[in-house]
Length: 144
Image (cartoon, rainbow, N blue to C red; front, side, top):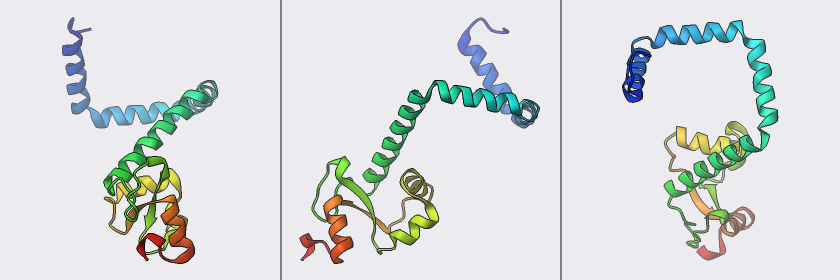
């Protein structure tokens, strides 16, 4: 190790990676191609042995993404003001959710799509009750 100080050593590594990023990408890609079978077996084994940890990590990531999305759209039902996160959903203002879900996907994929596209204004936060009433009756009873 060229440095006794671990912080200085890490800075040296970062500077090297910045200067040689293309070279490093090519090396990593070549390594992966050469060791693809081993890598895939290792990934499968790891996923099998750490299934609960992976599931928990993905669940936390999903909940954080959902919270971030709902917070961006106001954090409460635009109709009745409900703010309990478990009761809130993202609603398509133009009632074109079925078509949009076929294009984008559901759940996590939908939230990622919203973030990637800068949280478009065609969406709003509604609670489950207001969203269901809007679907069934065309308008929420709170708006009558």
